[in-house]
Image (cartoon, rainbow, N blue to C red; front, side):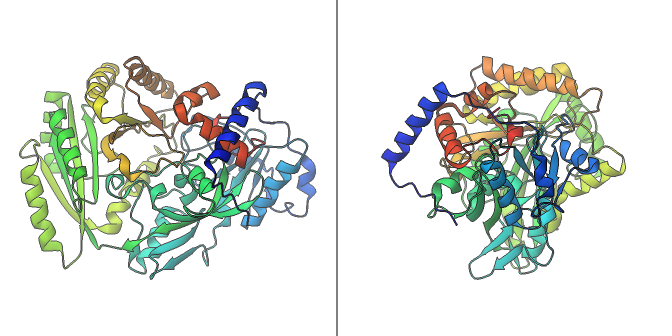
Length: 519
């Protein structure tokens, strides 16, 4: 294992200055020349590196179905050593070649692509007999990064334990979400998934594997969390666990007043030991009240809800959950009744369900299977995810939800808007956040057709331009920029830190070229 401890702040400052000077006089480029094909005859890769058209085609596309970027080959590793060896080969070669780790293919802009390079199929390492080790005494799980979160959940529930922070969709790899952030309605309370990692194994762009944590190789630890795959490939993560609840009391409240909607959300996320989950969404006059992410409202209520949406054109849904088991069910019922009384929603428009803990967490999967059965899942997804400062959310609502979105009248799919507490994140991690103590996650989770996805893309650009012209200091989550200039603006004052880490851990710019950060 390699050690990457940098205790001296002066040392870090000098490295940063040196990197900045070097950058001024050295163009940042990635060698995307043809793969050195002699590696195909290398005994280490002969049976694991493939150029088969089916494999290359699969690696060229992703969930977004907007880009198609072809690698020269796909690595199907059976061990961490296979990945280490290939990165080391690229690093030591006179002409290096790019590599990208691909989990379950849920990028939406080719972020896990490697043009003329090698895509590493991380899922090929999954072994059902190993890969998840749970410590009941330590309350953690050591997880190979190629495993899906749903698989982690199933394994930990066997022992009555569970991770605490989730994404809405569980069929994503552990390494994939930790390379970005991992957010959902639990984030306000527990922080994102990257705030709930105790330790990791990471292969750097030099082909060196290091175990890291907040106390060991801490700079690499924080760099890789939310690092977009730029500093290393995460191969193992130690995830925090807690005792698993049995059930979830799941309520939705409908609002017509956005200020009341946000005021209630912000109050609820400020309360300690309250809710376990909180999200909000926007409902438009574009169809039934349910969407593909979940079927929730009783059919008998659809007409009432649709009527209210038509009257106001835009309404808002507050979604909250409290977990419980047999011993706490009565008290949770009372707590949620008190909560309902304290909220300023439209009276008569509150809905309640009791479901199992698993059914709640895996709710999006049900919608996915329905869309797949109709051939409506593998379509373009021109998504846009933003972090909007609390001070700007009212302007955003007026200019975007009631302005751009209503005027264009094309938005389909869930439109999320819910607040988070900044103190649940760590500034040493690579994810960029607004400066304010509370900010909102806004997600345009669109589904389009292959002949009209660019209409949604134009709307995305219109939203971004509105925010820029209004100086709202909005930040993209799961960001996409076509050039390095956009990335420099994205990172702002943190760009030099990001650049210095890149030179430290991946000096030949081998990893994750699909992000377009170092073209």
